[in-house]
Length: 175
Image 1 (cartoon, rainbow, N blue to C red):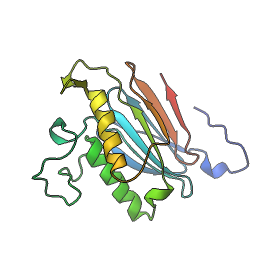
Image 2 (cartoon, helix red, strand yellow; image 1 turned 60 degrees about the horizontal axis):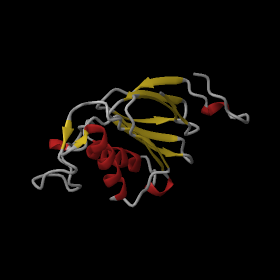
Image 3 (tube, rainbow, N blue to C red; image 1 turned 45 degrees about the vertical axis):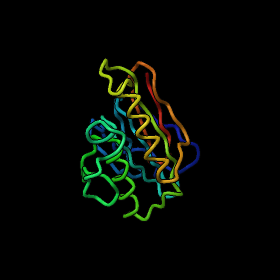
Image 4 (tube, rainbow, N blue to C red; image 1 turned 180 degrees about the vertical axis):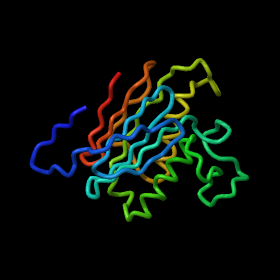
C-alpha cells in the first residue's frame, strides 16, 4: 500500500509495516504502519494526532471467562485479572491506556476507533456471537473511561483487513 499524504511532511510516511497477530497489542509511532486481519476479533485503535502515536489491539474474547468483565476475585485495582493478556478486550484496552499514559499521552487527546467483530463463528455465548460480545465489551470498557468512539466499522459476517498509518492516523479497511 502506498500512502498519499498532502504537504511536505515526509516524516509521517510509514517506513515499517508491522503485522499485529491475534492476542497482541502494540504501541507504534509515526513511521510505522500496522496491519491485521479481523474476523470475530476486534481492534480498538487509540491514536494521538498530536504525538503521532497509536495503540492498537487484536482482541479475541471479551474478558476472562468470556464474561463482559472480570470476576470479583480479580487481584488488580483496575478490576482486570489478566496483567499482560491481550487476548481479552478489557485487559488489552486497560494495558493500552496504561502504556500511553507512560508516554504522557492523555486520554482526552485520543481519537478512539473500533473495528471488527464479525459474526463469523457459530460459537455463541449467552445468545450472542463472539464478535457481538467483543463489540459490547469494547463499548463498555471505553465508556467506563468516559471516552467514546470517533469511528466504528463493526459487525457483519465477513473478515476485514485493517491498515493503520500511525503518523497520519488514517485507517483503511479492505473487505
